[in-house]
View 1 (tube, rainbow, N blue to C red):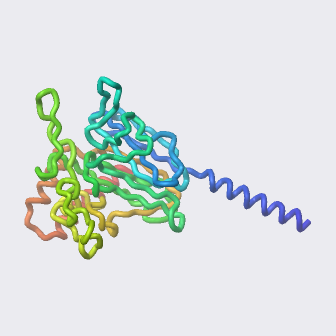
View 2 (tube, rainbow, N blue to C red):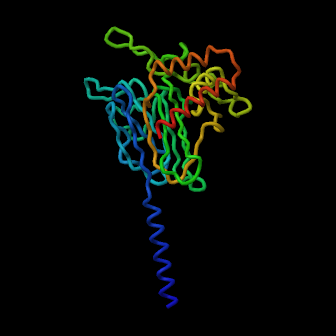
View 3 (cartoon, rainbow, N blue to C red):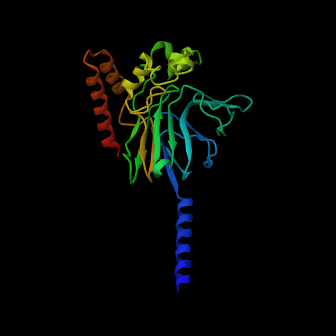
Length: 291
C-alpha cells in the first residue's frame, strides 16, 4: 500500500513538472498605427526561439504568438519597409539587417523603441520594460493581463516623439523628391558617440553617468520608459503568470494631442514635480481606458 502511495505521489509530481515545462505565455501584438509595421523579435542567448522572428502587421490588425515559458528577448516595430530590385528586404527604421522579413537572430538597428522581457525569472516573476536607450521610432504600450503576483503595471511610451525630437537627434526621411519628415529620434549616444551619453569608459557607473539633457527629454515625455542605461528604478516592471498585449501607436491619443502635451511640459516654468505629475496623470487616464 505504501509503495502504491509513493508511486502515485511520484507520478503526480512528474505530471506537475511536465505541465510546468509546457507552460507558455501569449504575446498579442496590435497595430493601431495608420500604416503597416513589421514587428521584429530577438531572443536572448540560450533562449528557446518563438515560431517567428518577424512578420508584417497591417493597420488595425493583430497577431498572437505563443512564447516559451522562460523566454527572454526584445521586440520592436519596423517602419517604411520594402524590397529592392534584387528582392532584398529592408526598413528605414528598426531594420534588423537580415535582408528578409524574418530577423533570424539579428536585432534592431537604432533608433527603435524596444519592449524587453525576461519571463519566469527570479521568484517566478516576469520582468519587462519599454526602452528608449537605443532611441525611438514608434509609440508603444505593454499591458500585462491575468497576472497573479507583482505589480503587473502597464508601461510604455505613448507619445509621438518624432515631431518633437530635438533637431540634432532627428532621423529625416525623403522620398520621391519630397520630405516625409522625421521618422525616428536617435539617442544622444548614437548621435554623438560621446562616452558621457553612452555611459561607457570612465562613465560606466550610475555615479559617473547621470541623466543628460537628452535623456531627460525622453524621460519627461515617457516617464515609465527607460531613458538611459541607469534608469532602472522607475522603468522595470514585474508580473507572474501573465499574458501580454503589445500595442503599437496606442489610441485614443492622436499626434496633435500628444505634441500639445509635450509643448505644455517643455514650455511651462513650474517645478519638475508638477511636470512629472501631469504626465503620470495622463498615463493613468489612458491606462484605465485601455484595460
